[in-house]
Amino acid sequence: MEKILVIDDNEEIRKQLKWGLGKEYSVLLAGNGREALDLFKRYHPRVVALDLGLPPIDNGTGEGFRCLDEMLKDAPATKVIVITGNDQRENAMKAIQMGAYDFYHKPIALKELLVIIARAFYLYNIEAENRRLHISLDEKATELGGMVGQCPEMLKIFSTIRKIASSDISVLVIGESGTGKELVARAVHSISLRKDSPFVPINCGAIPENLLESELFGHEKGAFTGAHLQVQGKVEYAHKGTIFLDEIGELPANLQVKLLRFLQEKTIQRVGGREDVPVDARIIAATNVDIQKAIQEGRFREDLFYRIGVLIVHLPPLRKRGDDILFLSNLFLRRFSDEFRKRIRGFSPSSIRLLESYEWPGNVRELENRIQRAVIMSEYSVIEPHDLGFTEKSSSPKMAYPELTNLREARDRVERDMAIAAIEKHEGNIARAAEDLGISRPTLYDIMKKHGLCSSAEMQ
Image (cartoon, rainbow, N blue to C red):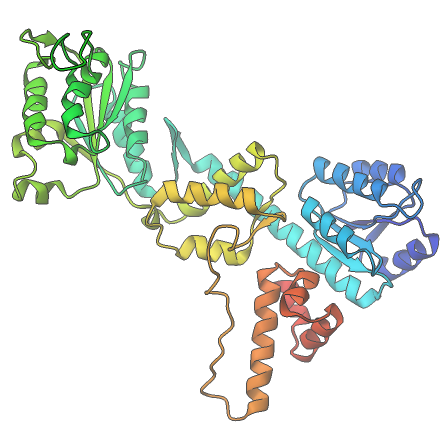
């Protein structure tokens, strides 16, 4: 039998709840904070009913909030249902922001409270199963040089990286913006024989053309106005290591010639210099443009392409990585929740649907940014679509029913669909669903009963 902890300083209420809940649950009773925390740590109940007004503070909520904070620190997944007076809405909302599952206003109607408690146990068990599955996925996932993935495409890429890392062949990484092309380059470098030497990245599309040659190959003193000293370029600085040329498709034609010469002869000439400088550096390049099209249009040298693309790695866009979307979402959620010290336990069902169906034009970089934003913006323990910056169109109820024959039937269908959408949006939290719909909690329960949603709400 599932255990539930009831914390209330009123002995009559404790007896009432002991009698009312005893058929369904094993009920633990506490009349103050010390007793409550002792029972909580001893029995680890999954659901707690907490009255905020606990002694020794008369008519105060400090001890109740302290209990809530301690319990959620010890077991963040616990579903705490806060019980308050009708005039304590502000305290109830503060408790929700701290991580409480739901709130309930006195006087207690046992049937309503039983529905909330049943839903709390159901959600706890669902989340526990999800955590178990995520642990299983974590064990199956592969991590390499900061890259993480478990889909077949990424596992093939990890295998390719391991095969080519020990050689010095040039590698071209092709993929959309934000897919992690630099991470591939860093991963290759991190397990190569050059790992103890510099990894030098340079974005060929971010540096003005008149400065790019000097940035890549360096310059001699007096080579141009302002060149007061001899300066090494990025290629020379990467001696014995790896240079990563991002957006190589943007490289000007004259520098393509100079880069080709370096690849062929392993020497460079600084701007304004005449001496050949030997450099031993591995080249890994990346681009998000269609290189074959650029070659046909004369914007990229074919002979350079064959030099830099001895091996080509095609990175899949995030939308084609299947379960990696949710896997990475949860990875970023844990990271940013720890970083910003937020108690966020996961994503709402509607958020999960949007994460899975969104096209992700910005790929992994966009996903990471949206999760970071959501953790910062969220005021509750579950990430909702608006936290992610989405407009939740997919969960809006349909308002047109061409097969209906009369207005009453249409009204009933709209009422039912809106109730389902609100309950689903708030993961069964009846108080927040009712608030979203602009009605009272008893009214929402009446609607649920009318349409036979009580049992389905518990099972969704």
